[in-house]
Image (cartoon, rainbow, N blue to C red):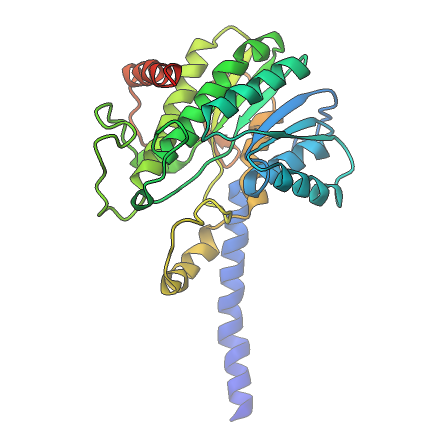
Length: 325
């Protein structure tokens, strides 16, 4: 009896587990990996939200390539802790903590002022930081904007525009905007752009997050158009579905985690895996690719039908919203 049970494990369960493991490995291979390890000595990179998750791994990957990396973080204690952690395995590059709270436009302006004053050149701005906070929590930025739209889009919109003169002076340079394929589920509704008229709380996913990611994608398109011929390239990136602290505010029940586990096994990436497309767009030669959306270290064709008039209007509206605060 015992031998028959052992045989069942060996001849049935083991091959199944092996097959599942191979499928997972194949998916990891398809996600792509940044294979460009050229030296970035003397190049200055800004990574927003570098104190955890994908931002931390991006900063680590750049330091490994000998870059000067500004870790733009809301909490300097966390930023310094991350630097200590990175230094346990990476001794190259320079890691510089600086305070930036994207939920406060005054903080964004103060950060930009310090960068412009202290750094003669900025070669790449990586707009990575983001939040996904359920609408029922009714969180707003310091300036009164819905938190997802305010941080994910407006904060980075202001930061990028403040640093554009420096990026142009430092050309060839780049702006990388971290979006998500969830932008395909988003909507740009200029009559309710940041929830000023309320939301439908019955939706399963966070519509404000999806909308903010669509705003990121439109911002990337419009920015690339406006920077054509300046030597500043723009890339919009989906890092993939990653295991990070992004959805820590979701308040999921324990049984949902159990149901989600099989999906997570095949689709969930580590933060390091999620950083690969960002690093690829930050360091690889990508001639003629400015304005493109990237996923898995290669161009991605979005299912969303982008309309140029929306990207132009979103820029103008974002400018008006942020100029008056």
